[in-house]
Length: 162
Image (cartoon, rainbow, N blue to C red):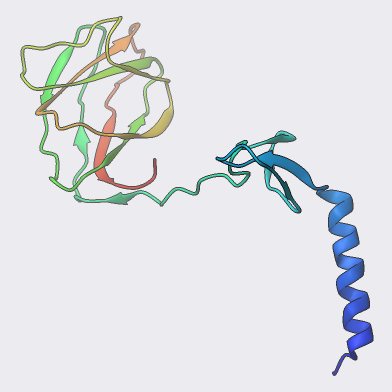
């Protein structure tokens, strides 16, 4: 099937007209402060993702760097310390919280340092998250409240996914 140039131009013109109806041109300021018009812009909640770059950043999928998970076994409201071995090239970690209560985690350099109700990162019950990592030797963990069942979060070190 061969399209004539007239038919192709008509199709492209119609398609562009339809796209303009669904995604009207928006104006943004570039890094020099000049106004720039963009044709089709991916937006979030009908607001521009960025004033300097209307397209959102795309993240890499998480790639695990070890096979066995680090299990933070039998957490409760009293802080526990877990030794970890982090692969040297790891830039992120993924944590899975199967618990029915929220969990606080803190990466530490020694087993004597402990997370408190006011320190560390709070992870919500029954969620997972991927976060950037530092180079801790231990993870101090505790639940916020008393779990009604076993609370054993799992961690994996890796790259990407953040």
